[in-house]
Length: 531
Image (tube, rainbow, N blue to C red; front, side):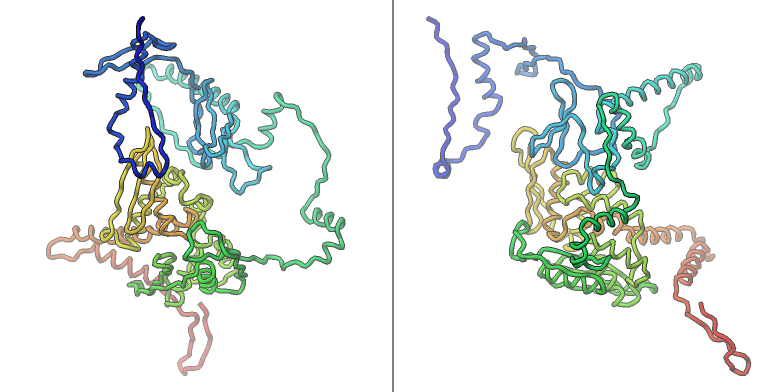
């Protein structure tokens, strides 16, 4: 009788107490290659090779075996680079070849590409073309045929000459116009596939008619119910204990009406009640005659808002306003409303382009894994660059450097550890590049526990905050370059022209008088001219 030898790998599962008593052994005692060789040794002796035949290739002293199989995948056409998957969704290829979208936490699958709606209307929003894969692929095939036809016609006209393809620039507005479907377009595509029915419903010509109809149904109840005046806005925020952790349940809510209160008063009430801290103002004297003073709001050792003004009071008001835009993003609407009504705020309102670019990040959390991709597509600094800017402004990077450590866990999964001073964060990532950015996001969240959105951090440390510094450095470099135009024993006319332009600029920015008195030769008042 022939004896068959089997290699058995036994694993002893010990309890928590036994694991403490057992000596710790490293994972390098038995390598993965030796374990795989032991498992496959029995198959080689028995002559079993599975369903597919193995192919072998020699790599040094070892023999690498592999199998070949056919995999069906969908040919990608019409990819929209402006369309990103929502948080937690990934795209995988099904065995049928079609792409399927999986939500990792809930394990929900769909063949239609999901998209983030945000604050848009669920009934009336424009549907992305990628949300209907069949229609998207149909249009992509039609576009491919059209391009092939145009290339064929151009090849006949070129007569063998080399043809250089032109680069195509597509803006976000153009992409939104071509890659969005209105209700009528979606309905026309679905009509041959689905059956629709028409229903009779009440339609009011205005919201006023609709309200009158509702009031007629419940007249007594509406008349007896007290309401607040129109335009009333209340700020509601949870009260937290600084000794509790960031995920602790708040002890209550504080409600405040911002009407009739200055930005300084709103900031002090918010910080004292919600954060249990006291804001501190740091004043500095600037070498700018138009705004000689600057103020910075410091809360719990971290710098937030920054503002300038003709006096310390105006600089303090501007810094409080900038801090409210960071801590309470909803306050920007009230600030715009005050500016449109002509109220004094101490500082100009940010441009609409800057607010539009940063408002995208107001709905994105600080530790969102899509932040690095969003920043790359909007030319904003990466999370690691934001972290370096934060440390340089608040701590000084030379005194406390950042330490990194990558610990491989399993295949294609690593643990990235970032340490700065007494703060340490750990992130599970795929590679070092991804871990560096996500660990920077986690570190920024630890350093700014009161900030929840990435848009607030960009207002603190993004391109908008660095614009004035870059412009000042650029002006200094221009003046330095003008020194090279000097000639021997003659004045430097380039520097004189630059000095003249700067003096004229200061004259334009200077505050003129409100009115002037006109006297005759006998010093009698003739008229008053207002400016």
